[in-house]
Each structure stands twice: as C-alpha cells, then as structure tokens.
Image (cartoon, rainbow, N blue to C red; front, side):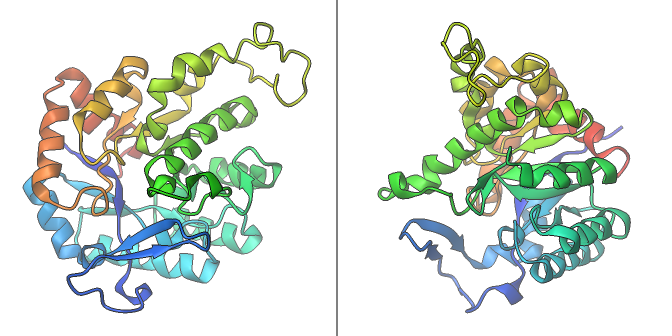
Length: 326
C-alpha cells in the first residue's frame, strides 16, 4: 500500500473574494486596532500552483480552508464551500474541503453545515479559536458542538484572525506572531475544563499550530488542574474541572496539526515531548507560512525521518480521521 500524505492545514481564497488583483505583490490588511491581520497574494487562488507544490513535496491530498469563510456570514460561507467542492472536482483526489459555517450563525448556518456534510461530503468544519467577544466554552457554542456530533464532523480550530482583545499586541506584529498562539492554548484549556468533551464524548477537535505550541506550557497547565494546591477549590469559575484528567482529552478528543511554524522541525520535536505521535496531524499552512515546495518537501522529509512516529503523523492518523475518504 503506497503512502498517503494529507495536509490538514492548507489555505485558499477564491479570486472573486479578493478586491484588487494583487499581481506579484503581498497585500497586508490591518484590523480596526491597527494590528496586521491577513496577507493576500496570488498563490491563494492559483490552485495549479498548489498541486505543483504538492507534487514536488510528495503531498497527496490537501484539506482546504479559507480565512474569508471562518465564522463568516452564511452567503459567503456557501460561496466558499462551493468553490472548495469545485476544486475537488477540478483536481480529482487532490483536495478535500472543510465546511465553512459560522458556529454562532443559528439555523441558517446549521443548514449550510448539513449541506456540507450530506451533499458535499466534507469531513470536518473550520471555526476560529474565539469570535464576537466570546470564547469556545461560551454556552452560545453548545448547539454547534451538538450539531457537529450529530453530523459526524470533526472541528478544525484555526486561530482567530481578529482577537477579542488585541490591545496588548499593538506593536511588532504580536497579534499574529504570538497572540494567535495564546488564543489556541486558551481555547484548548477552555474546551477541556468546561466539560464540552464530557457532554459530547465523540467530538473530535483538530487544534491548529500544535495548539499554539501547548507542549512547552503543558506541565504548568497540568499543575493548575490541582485546585487544592493552587487554592481555587470552591471557586465556581476557577475550580471547574472535567470528569477526567487533562491528558485523557488529549488522547481521546484532540488532534494537533503541525501548521503554523513555517515548516521548522523543532516545533514537531517539541510537541512530541508531551503529546503522543498518534495525536499529531501533518499541516503546512501553505501558502501563508510556507510558500515554496522546497520548504514543504524538507518538512515532509524531516517528519518522515522520525520513523514510526513520522508515519503516524504523515499517514496513519489521517487515514483514521478521514475513514475511507482518501
């Protein structure tokens, strides 16, 4: 059986959603607080270039997500979902789409989520790590988790492109470099400690960017689960704990993709100190944090060189998650 490498963190933006043709330029947009938010360039919509990169790097399938469709209005989500499906058809067996549907979008968004699962055959749905002033443990998200379980969709948590609070990141491109990673770590702790996985034991969540590099913090996070030691026992918000220990959810409900670190192997090696290889997925963050086939190929080769662990990350975990879709 030949290896099948899947890139779970691979972006595109339909040309129709980019106002002016960027040509050969990088166009950087800023949020209303003046923080750099998103880089637009022609690689985002040149799908032939994506396939060429994948061929050169040895990637078989890329699962497509689009920043413009994350936590977006339903008409835009719908347009993006149709585009992802079109790329699946235009390049057979090379692409799969993530569903784009706003988790707080109500009945209309859930209808689109159903269409993505039933008609378009997408395996998962992409959301952001925080949105609209809320975090993922907010009760407003509860119907969304239930819907995903019902539809058998896994959830890809991408960092929020606009953080709820960005004041402390007002210089040095901090919101993008570390603010987003902070957001992912917080989202992971909130998902676990709020009991979402206890209420929905079959829910699977893919945290992008190795959950913001959570491995380097996880000893500290585990320690703070000891509410007696830290003196918070009895506090309704700060002493809340799930039914099982923290790592139970890492091993049963969470997956972590290797996107977001520009193809540098150190991030994967750091993750493996604390997270079993069976919970890691391959992701590139092409064509944002990686923009050439050479960097991608080096990353693939570096992970493959890990031997049995590398095989899990590059192939086996993808097969288990996508169950016969590849």
